[in-house]
Image (tube, rainbow, N blue to C red):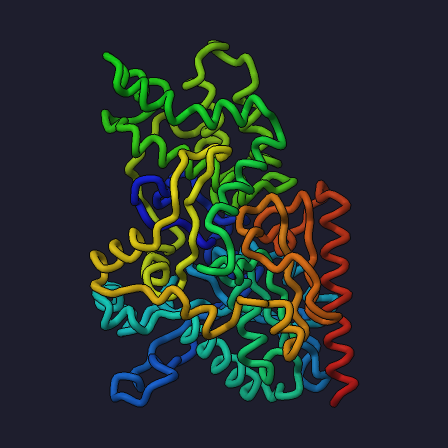
Length: 490
């Protein structure tokens, strides 16, 4: 999900995922999940693909999920669709990637979802998180390049075991997984014939994309719905600060936002609200969803309705902000009060902080005077200082663009790359770092004005708008062309 990890002033803090609210999209038990969607398997993976030190040869068990219900088999050279796992539990992402399941019958495809090392159950060092996460000497094996090598190694071994050496592989991914899918196609073209990279901000790095673009898109999402809503959100930070500093202000904030304890300091409350606005914009789906929290269709619109409505005390702006945040945190109405410091991590995302301190230096948090968030500037020095404190290391802010490219992307990829679909929804703040224009006939950008974060990969519903149905049909048509060309070239 490419979530936020740093708590410096003027940046969006680590989002909270209240464990009482978050459930997988399909709300499946592990038994029913394995029976209906996939079987769980493990692959003995090497710890370090790039060095030959004694420790490099250690191994760990890497989890992958597989579904062969519709596979046409190796004799028919039927395709293999592989999901390149994100920064979290692979079951969570699998249960939210219905596109692959729904298109498997059409292509007679084998489905494989590979878990990213150091996440979920794919933990090196004997599966012991305390050891694996202990310090930089063990976490040093957590990187995008190691993950891509994991995927290549597993796919090649799987094809060998299935006698499916002639079956074409297409990789899929959303968000960070989408970045990995695109990079996999670039780095391992002999393994995958193409990639669908959904909401993949491969350009959101220093010197390539402005740190302002992320929050500017969120601002436009809300402002495009309601000018009054925009003005209320923009003025809310000063209102909260002023209220807190008044006599009885902390108690008023606690009461207005149904905070469980007395810890209603402005910083925690502001971070809690910012998280709601950010994730509502990211997942501003056209149908009800349960990816992060249960939310209605177009949650940004519903938040603005709460702010613009005359519900309760018409003049109580704090109350309106509470009802807006409720769309994200408590749409089911089951939560009676909120712990602003609750930091549960039900999807196992916590080690993204390490990646955000080493190679994934994605500048965001800077705001201009038009933003709904407090005005601020992105600071690499702040990030570096935190990483020094947390891990005693200095980030490598330009490694990703050195390893995978990013500068002059159209000119560079047009020279050597092929068969990549970049999907981006313009309501998704991460789209500001995405590929939004076609690069060549085979590197295609599909852009949806009303689209949100990897909405194309979600399970379809009867309520899906026509534009979303058209996009999925377009993606299927392109993938079918890749596979047809592959067989013609054999």
